[in-house]
Image (cartoon, rainbow, N blue to C red; front, side, top):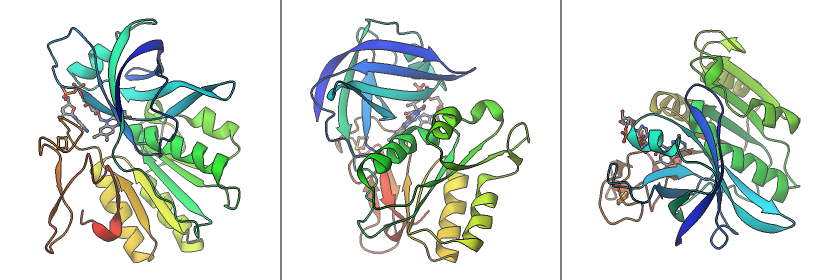
Length: 265
Ligand SMILES: Cc1cc2nc3c(=O)[nH]c(=O)nc-3n(C[C@H](O)[C@H](O)[C@H](O)COP(=O)(O)OP(=O)(O)OC[C@H]3O[C@@H](n4cnc5c(N)ncnc54)[C@H](O)[C@@H]3O)c2cc1C
Ligand code: FES
C-alpha cells in the first residue's frame, strides 16, 4: 500500500452525475485484485478533510508498463463534487491499493456479475481481469440494473467485449423494466453459475443474497460502507457479519468484498 501524489490524466463527465478520472501513479498498482480500492483526497482542501474510498475501475497500461488507474464515480456530496472539478495535471492524494478483493476459486468456470448503478465500478475491472487471466473459464454473464437509462454504466465497453449482458431499469427507459434481480432469478432457473459477484445498493445485495441461498450458489459481494481511514484504524466501517463469536468485521480491511458464507445481510 502506497501513498502518492497522482497526476490527473483526465476527468471526463459521462452523464449528469457520473465521471471517470484517470490518475497517473506508477508504483503501487501492479498486482491489484479486482474489488480493491483507493482512498482519494484533493490536497489543500480542508472540507472534506477525510479521504474518500473509490474502487479501482481500470488499470492503465502503456506498452506493458502500468501507468496508473481509472476511477468511475458518481457525485453524491462534497468530496465527489470536489473531485469532479479536478483537471488534467492537477495532483490528488491517493492511498492504496486497499482491502480484500474478489477471490474467484480456480475451480470456478462460470461467474454471474450483478451490478446496480455505480456498483459496476469494481465489477468492470473484475470482468476485464477474468478475461485476461482465466482462459479456462466461460465468459461472465453480466446483469446491469439502474434506476434509469442514465444509471446504466459501461454498457458500450462491455458490449465491445462481446459479453452476454442483461439490462434492467426501474422506469423502463432502457432494457427490461424492473429489477436486475428479477432477470438474475430467471437465469438462475435455467443455469447455475459457480459464483455470483455483486456490487450495488443494499436492497439489491440483500435480494442477491436470498437468491444465492435459494439456488445454493456461492456469492461474493462488495460493500460500499462509509469509511474514514480505509486502514482498520478508526472503526468507522464496522459491518455485522454473523451471530456467532465473530460478530463484526471492518469493511476496509476484512472487505470490502465478503463471501456470503461469512456474512449476514
Ligand atoms: C470500498 C468502497 C468503494 C467505493 N467505490 C466507489 C466507486 O468506485 N465509485 C463511486 O462513485 N463511489 C464509490 N464508493 C462510495 C464513495 O466512497 C462515496 O460516494 C463517497 O465517499 C461520498 O463522498 P462525498 O463527500 O461526495 O459525499 P458525502 O458528503 O460524504 O455524503 C453524501 C451522501 O452520500 C452518502 N454516502 C457517503 N459515503 C457513502 C458510501 N460509501 N456509500 C454510499 N453512500 C455514501 C451519504 O450518506 C450522503 O447521503 C465506494 C465506497 C467504498 C466504501
Ligand atoms: S475505515 Fe477506518 S477502520 Fe475501516
